[in-house]
View 1: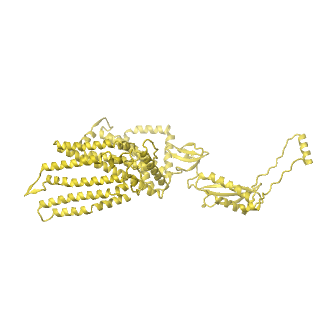
View 2 (view 1 turned 135 degrees about the horizontal axis):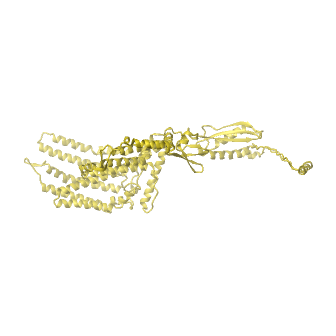
View 3 (view 1 turned 135 degrees about the vertical axis):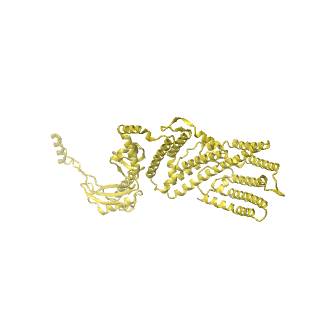
Length: 631
């Protein structure tokens, strides 16, 4: 991915000069001069290398049209604010914290005696804390670019001047994820959160001034690390969203399914921007598999961030172990007590099974379906089998976590088997047949089948029955057992190409070659008729009323058969009339029997007198030469 490659190259570029300084520090540490002098020079050079690396990386990361603007979609005003704030804090840390480190470790000596200077160290540390507090208050003020960007009710300043992103956008232009209610709720309370952060920094300074140095230092370090965890988690979330979007766009070039997913992502991003401009309107969100992948990554990142915060603030692992060993009121069948940790593991397995069942289509769509054929039947079968496997694994782990052995309830399973054999055999048979349908795949999702005199499209294959939607948009629920043991016609099992039969009867005196050529021309002129297999036309039989011609054309899918047949018959009627080819109709003689003698004598007298109108014989229809030429 271009973003990962660009980030690695930027980190290598920022580490060039710091590596030279680190090498110089190692040489100073091992040089021929006194050891105290070498250690002092090495410490200063290491600090300079670290500060220079942070300065170079921040300058590259937040430069105009840099990585942050290109891949994290931060406005130019916000990147400028981060760039200036990072430069200022790095310089302050180099000037104030490096001397503190030197004094604390006794690396500054006068005539062989280490200089500690605790008062000066405390003063320098307090000065750094005040600088950080002032920087927080300044950059978290309500009118700052950062706070304006975070607030979803305020349009992002400078967004129109930003360079267009090189990858497809999957989230809105302001801070956070698209359409997530909890993110919007947090963003709209950003001013309160900013005030709490400033108050936290003020509390650290007050504690340090009052003499509680250890507590102030612990809170300061924990607060900075927590802020770093939050910033890293947000950047990782934005980066994963861009990674998913890039992968979808790359796969959409060769796969129409992923092209549809990309269209859903784009529509969702446009709807989110409209929602940011008009927060009172609620827009419908299209749920697709790409969005579910993003939500899975969000949940994972949040859980990892919570774990890191727990480690930062020193949640006692001994306490968690003590709680996990607390026994519960019941015991397992083998006499071993069930503890709280076992119950937590069992509930975690159940939760993992539920999440796997819900998000399995998204996980497989992103990880596996890019490499398989674009067949909805294949995807549905794989997803269903993977769901059953995940559910079985989750149930097994959950039961074993609480020391529940299935062999201990063998009598119950035996009774259940007898009950299934007598009362639920049809249900079990349909379930097994459903698995056979998914594995053998005689019918697939989207196939057109004929079952029991009804033709329709397969919509779903469930564990008990299959849903088929007919032409009247009615759902026919067919038990899976009938699809396995009965006879069905699958129109699209091999492919979706269908043959349309055309039958025409013309007069006996018509030219056979002219009729055949005209039928082929009409068939080839229709836009739904495929060139391969090619259309064909031939004389099939000599009927009583005329010659019977048959034509066969092929269309791409069953839904095109009716329209193609309608257009072909309409064109045949028009073109045959223009060419002077008469469509024959059957001639029938009707004999009346059982009439009264008076009515028979009356009809005979009229026929002898010539009063009965004579039928006009039908013949070929002639047209003007000009009309024929115009056709």
